[in-house]
Image (cartoon, rainbow, N blue to C red; front, side):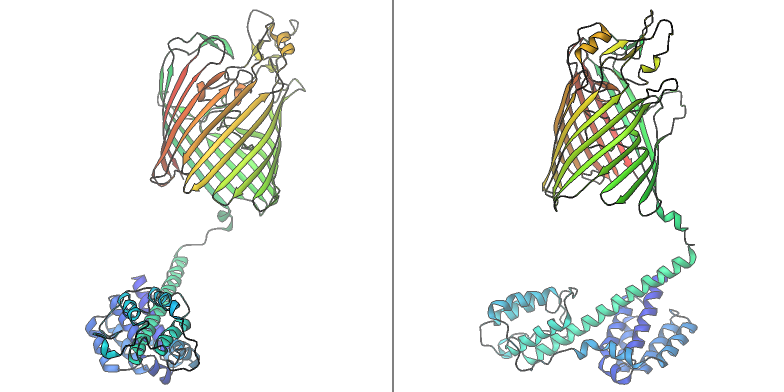
Length: 625
């Protein structure tokens, strides 16, 4: 009832403006007719009531409008108080609004005006098409006028003249200035393509259409204002700070199957050599990941973010929770907590725990890893399509209470980006990651355990290790330094938009590996295996969060034993770590808004050493909000 009532109230107020003076009302009776037709179409009055009123009035006047108001009041559409208010406004309506209501009629050009420039014959048909698109002429009328071009004709030659009152044409909303369209009608008359009566009928029909469109637009605007007013009067305004906070989240359900080659050797866990690593028993798991984030705009330059995620405090490269622990509750941990400051459009600084600031692939950094510390990015623009990006950061890896040699990561990256609208974009970057104080130091027998802090708090598998315990027990630590040079690039081709083709290539080399130092720490002549690379292609939509959107990918990965620190690389390929090579393939498909399915098949084998072949299949149901 609110919407219908707003239409009626607006229609009556527009009637008031139409009949602001007797002279204006006489010229704008067509406006009253249009309003009556609108009220009839909306079901406010019947066809008989509309016809009876039109026959009774003949032209717009204040008396006629009072009759309409009385009719609406009798039908219960408006109240007696509303009717009285409208009549009071009618009595005080200024001449200015009445003159405004008839501006369409006053702007109609004279079809017999002299001195007008004729339309060239080669432009007549395009002009007729414009008049059709703007709702001035119908399709059949355009064809009929087109047949008259270049011919001598008289009304007697036509079986049926144009724009008869009982003929309707296709509706098209008018978007061009009415003056130009009315001039085109007049010009067709002057060039003898339509006669005087046809021109007058076309003008009259067009003016009626414009009047109805204006009324409809005003009614819609009035209805929107009234609805907004009603809503605001019932819903209290939220505090200002709530408008500066946004929430986001996602949920992923996963079935994962791990298949082990029957010829695999036996392995022990690198961080606990008394426990065997599973290398033979296939495993099937149901896992979930849940994340919830909040971003608050502190001011125009500062942003604060907090994120929670499933996972545990001993595995930085996974946020999965495996189901099947006697129905126990799951951990939901602080995964993000940062301040982000952007003093200029080209400079951004982060502090706290924040998302990965590097342009990279999962060759070096797991996609699930976040960083503790500080970072800064500078993005100067070189040209309209080309820009640089430079990132530097310092990140504590392990704080040691009894030593001044805390473990740190210092990193820097320089890259260039090219973007040609939506058709092509490319990025190329070089990064250097320097891990400090991460190699092992053997304990002094006189002070057992003094250097246990040099063992990593978390590791996967693949790196060359040393024993830092001189006794019978074994405690492992990294034997090599890690100073990683990483070069990667991407090429995004959008010539088939919305389907895109993305090519990726990534290369890493651990420049910190020194064969002499590793031999001194391990007593073994360890082969230098410090390189890794990955290349692949992705085809499809960039975002699959809608029904029917899709993408498919194919990658090849080769990562030698000491190419990167095994703790922070991807945990799915070869079930984590280094010393692995193989293929990754998969596809995503959108099934609903913000919901999509994805599959991955990762097949990998060892590069050197005892055999270890692992294939991983993943099927995911993803939802975001």
